[in-house]
Image 1 (cartoon, rainbow, N blue to C red):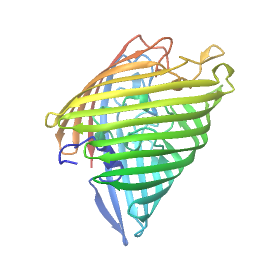
Image 2 (image 1 turned 90 degrees about the vertical axis):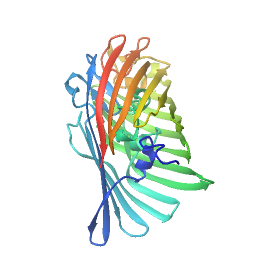
Image 3 (image 1 turned 90 degrees about the horizontal axis):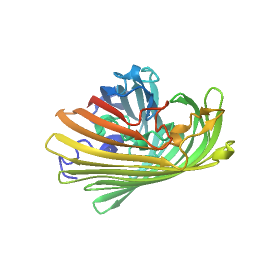
Image 4 (image 1 turned 30 degrees about the horizontal axis):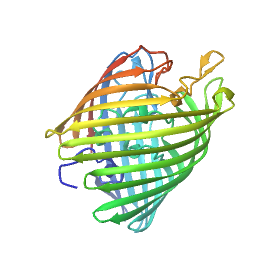
Length: 369
């Protein structure tokens, strides 16, 4: 990959540990420590709470929406075994309480094979492993139509990374399996009995393409008075490319799930996609993104109340205009204007009924260290 071509969009490189880091020695075992942080604000039509990833944005979070601090730690036990942990603090629901986003042991008997076990990131989206590292991508935050459709981001289990070199390219195969212990996410209680899937990504001179297939069984989502069990099947694929000065990023996800106990809505299907186009002008990257999501039902009503699993069955589209400016090494300033349009009778990704068109302005600064 040519030098300077992908200063920021190679989040997948970041996710595999190619960060600037410092080494601290504890006995004979070096610790590699790196980090990332974001600080920002959002303003606009925030009369209704909005789901963004695993967070909820409301009027009270105008200056906390994108505030993030992460510490990434790797310790080499010996030639074949290492430990990786990532501590993550975010500025919304958990009010900066620290959680272990990653915490796994990596056994790598060969240079092209790793077996990892512990707390891992659920890799169902193209940018799952670096979604909290905002410096790794051009937007203020990834397109919510794709990245807000799954109410949990980590799981306890095992995966395998097997790399095959094909000329100057690399094919990475990643089967995974595990479960999600009871946890709180976007105001819901989530418990996953089991899940498994496989990723395949091809990395080459101009970027990467990725395909994911997963099945997640017996997902129990509940609120104060209502609970539902969900079996989820999904397939996703995406591409992150840069050719010359042109940036092209796209992703598509199709979901099919069964809501057990809700006869009227026993089978629900939905999909989501986005397309980002950008043009690099030195340290400045203007870009535009169109994103859309839909399902074959618009809302789930029980006892006259919209059921809180609605993030799984929403219809909306959005247009985002943004500029990223790499003002200093490892420091990026971003500004975005976004218009979100819920469709039909859906509230989209809003927790209450929003306006017909919601307009938001976001400003953020991202750093790595």
